[in-house]
Image (cartoon, rainbow, N blue to C red):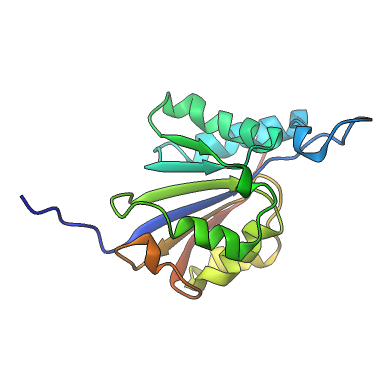
Length: 175
């Protein structure tokens, strides 16, 4: 039996939602979501993340995990999650290297993490994009924003600068 691999991969890049300010003696990684951040994460998950990806890579920071919790509530365990310490405040080249180690059978991946690495990763990968997505992205990768990239590759090892199309870029729109 021959397995046919798709010729494109889908990469979702989600910046954590708005966090509370650090309390005395609290590390940056321990900062939880602010109430408005929890609301934004839930809205983004309900609006843009109804279908679970094949794999989730998440920073161990509390605010990143709580952002992801909003999507996991919808998916009910349908997406495997890997919380990886190296994703905390990772640089774009580190993120790209990690993406390159994803199994070839994985078609879609969600990365949940932090600025400036995520925004720089999207800039590094996106050769072109939907005009509306490019315009919104140019205004900044604000908290809870989500980028959707389409990569014309068969293996994640092929992910490289300028290999992707920015298909969508969304930011929270709360009432």
